[in-house]
Image (cartoon, rainbow, N blue to C red; front, side, top):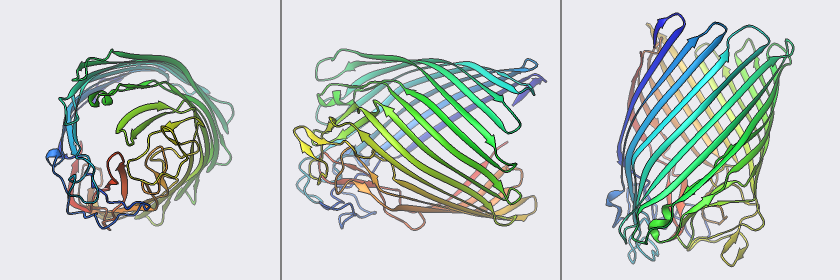
Length: 486
């Protein structure tokens, strides 16, 4: 952070990331028809690959950001500029086994690779915000986003296809908060967004499809109220309307099919809750209820017997739920946290039909073209999530020894748009542990850690077009971490 004058501060950030590892490990027929439990074909220490070159994954990226704040006297002008660039590739044996060998029945071999080349992304935000002690505070600003990148998809049985994607988006926004009384304040905001996306085919062995362009513009808004019921208990309510621009999916072009487009979606949400700090602020406990409706929600219809990846819009998506979180300082050195959320989601579209799996047991009504998914939960949306953490510290010198553990458990989670007996999970849980020493001022930390300490095998996803392929969470990982900051 550089502060050349009292009114001006400049923060420059530069970062680099290099990943050389393994893509998702697909495992053939680790589910038995009619069950979502891992069967005898699953072995953490063994894979059955004859393609995919051992599933390599490599990505390199770097970026810079510059934040400038200037105090104008009663007003603060902020500029945030950022640039990111990335290149990488990921390859995999998709069927997870060997056709004609196993494990189980594998009708054909499948291996593919996707790469991102020359991703350039630039963002610019400018804000002007009030800085005074009056009852009214506000900010106005603008945002600009521009990106361009190439995607090359290699299906393995024909030459690869290369597509160019471009996205330009900009927005103007404003927000204000008014302190109505000592106990009540209200906040309102407006945002206008324009979003443009383009896709062009650079090369494909299946001719040259026409370019695709989509665009939309919308006004989104939010209105909230915050009421201090007591010094340590507050109530709040919020209603908002959000917007997600249209999307283009072109990967199917590499497999001889056309691209797909999902139109814009809008969401109307409602939330109300409370926040509290009790027992001389040793206990923090918050809760909320929420309800939202998405008009024209975007979904990816992945896989199916046709092995496609189509973007689609449903008529509506609906959800409601509750969530609680708490933090308790049991002693000066022991802190525990816990959270719970219940989330009921539902696709509401009586006419939506999607392709289904090659070998699984579909529980939705089957019609010509696939399964009717009206009433199904959103894919990969857990019905509930539980989490718990505990941290104990022991002061020593100008730092502390500490022990930290974290755990989570999630409820029923459907993996695809359609429901089946196999492709879902229920009751998955995982825990971690960290033991180390930290400097009191946060300058550095050194610790030994373990992730998935009970070595749970939780189904995380599936590939449905070939066999009952699944992939699971990471195994137990033990290591040492060192971090430092200035």
